[in-house]
Image (tube, rainbow, N blue to C red; front, side, top):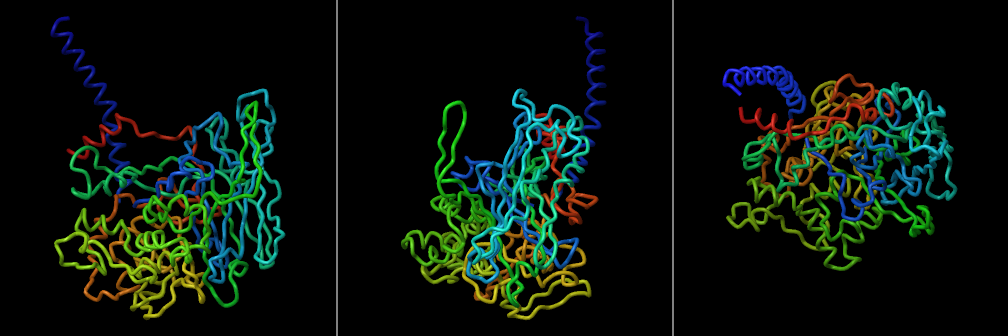
Length: 563
């Protein structure tokens, strides 16, 4: 080939590449701007449950209803990393599992109200491999071949007979694409059920939704926060934050009821957690069938986010998933032996995450054994007296195990301006409390007491209506927990180490550069805005729209990060 044709060919290739790459680079730049400055759960928090996807809790949320300030909303999500295009056997509730949301309203760490979801699949035509044989226009459309029905019950302590709230009703199908589910929003809306309580009406939704969590899972590469300068970020390779959960779905169980239905007496604080139960025996039979028998036992448990991921050590992770909060204090005080007691207490009151932040990045910690020592074992650890709860980090103990009371004045933002709460103010601790892990919310803190501009940093951002007082969908829980471990709440919750002062500059460092979910929540007009409509979670993402990160895209990101 002559040099002249070669040059013409190269020019043509260059022109084509310029036409192709220019919009791609522009799109990439927009995407990077969209994802600029949080962190979240891996959804695979313990060895055994990571191998049982359909029973795996991903997240729990509890917040005051945006539609009705007299109502409270409980959300449990399950089945991590649902690829929307995962057909022909799409994701669904597991008919052999029971999915529970628990509510404690008297502080004894036992469920006073339990909402339970069960399901049943019905296949219309066994002679086809298809999930749907044509467009699904309604929940009863015969084209939806593999339908799933749900039943929701409410069990109230002292009454062993469950109350049926939803009886064998169709949930929504998964969001396949514009040919199969062209009006998916209508299908999801049709799956919303109205329920009754003695105090008023409520709502239930149980089906596929967008995953409301966001995270760059590279945090597990020795606590790397991409988007930050080394050593916190990477020195080579891609250092641009990526939301590892973007475009994935989960299955969510959402219950909204009147606040007065779940509170007890004059106490305005309730606690909640979620779990999954399975029958003790599974028998794999001939011809691909299974049989399940025996009592149901708990196989998954989730209250406060990230507890099992980054607080509970490997030796206790599977055990944590199997026990209810009512056993936490006994384990904490030695009923299972001194070794487990010491390991559990140290994990909470001298968190390993804090030790890593200190030893890897020099983040000063409150109540260090010796903050001025060159010995990292002393500088980066808090002394804990085994058998004496709260002898170590009292702030962490309060946030996760009892709820919070202020040890010092704290200023919040409200509709009428800044308000200083006095020492002793009860943020979200029940009048009588048994230390146990769950999310707690003070249902009296709402409305005008909320920040007029909700803070993604919740209480740490001066917004008393956010995490860890409950958990809203917009709360940046991982960033909040990173800052809390670094001592951001220590002066106002504990304060016994009077020499400690939190470094505000850490707010801009202990972040992985992602501030919000990848898609809007229900009723919101943009990602990052608070939801406005039940069931509040973002609509399930479509397999047609699911973008996978690919090598070419990573090359573009790497090039942009270096130029």
